[in-house]
Length: 361
Image (cartoon, rainbow, N blue to C red; front, side, top):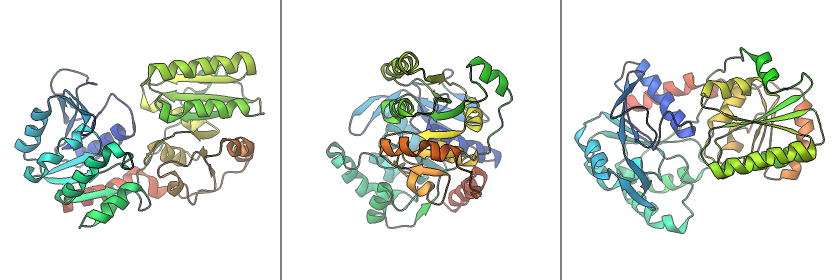
């Protein structure tokens, strides 16, 4: 059982991570089920996708904000279904938080992927982490991505068992089959370099930063492509207004693609000349691994696990100083690509380790 606040068709890091694990274990002939929110749902009740079952619950919220919906139904579901393993993907959301009060009564082996503890320094979450400290040792396995992040440090302090370290990853990306049609559709000339930014449209994903950087670049032969799903209509409207502002006052081209198809964003990443990551809040973003596997030069803000992911990658530039990004942009864009061994970031290799951890549980 994989517990995730949201799942497909919502596309985001946690949702994609859950789907990748589910697909892998199905291919290894395990029975896999998902527990997720019915707020984003394909059909009524239970839907079978790739031979795993999706169990929908009409629930929203978390421990601090409060819950709405079928909370007791979900807790009863965790207790009565004697799954061999329950995997909780991310804390600070209902599919994990509702398990905490009953965690000692859940007979399944319990595995946690905490996903950062982004609110650990928020005073409103003090009671939450006090509760988590008391409940943390009921988990049989915990998987973090790096020793330098907040979730690992908290767990290391209070958890009496071994913490497993596994970074996220990416799969090999297929090449764009209709590249010429894509360039023709968006009027991209042969001389123009493509800057790609892939994130769902939310303030903390920072597309406004990407446009601000793009506006100040002196190179005229550049196109900024923003790809993501619409998760905040007001913020998206603001980004569209910024796009038209750049077009009419700076003669700069920004392309916005509201992508419902994951493969399309990967194909566009593959044809881009540089990947620009401007998020304000992250844990271990999949899209950075995807840019590495696609052999892209990367300019990124220093957020979440970014510095650790790109530590030995000479094709990257990391800073929180926008002016430094602008100053060094052309240098990164036109420098040669340095060989980087990305095999440790391939999902095939990482998922084998997940499999071993799950089986040992």
